[in-house]
Image (cartoon, rainbow, N blue to C red; front, side):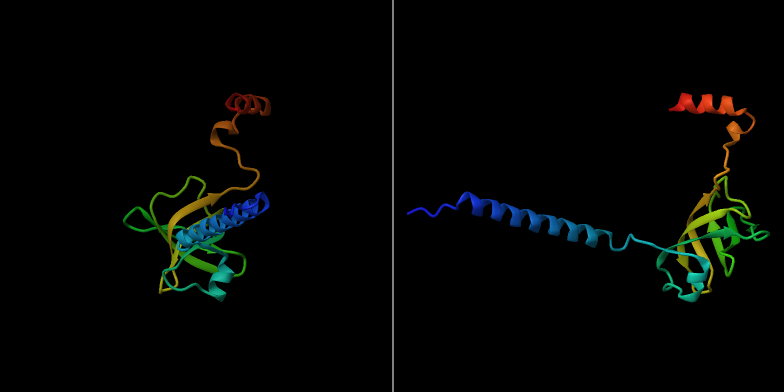
Length: 152
């Protein structure tokens, strides 16, 4: 006597097996990425509820006017990031992006040190909607459109 599954039951077994595999894959992905996520803070949030010291976070805001200072080693830069309410001191060692200037937007990946200084590992400078690459600044609109069209 054979106990073969009916086609209806075979499909049900396959669907259940596929769901188990998908759930397992999702759990493995979450477990593998658990330490890679970084939370985004603006200065007000960072001061109001600071993350634990050494936890990877992302800080975003505006570079405050008159705050950029290069230390004597030549590669370490300190500056303040603000959101209109609060400012947070930031220290970054490395080459700053070309768009990194006072009054511009910045996103810094790093950690909050015990002394309250945000130690940045990477800096991303943001520009506004009026940004124009240096190469296109001296061109007329027609010339700039022609150059853009050539690169597409």
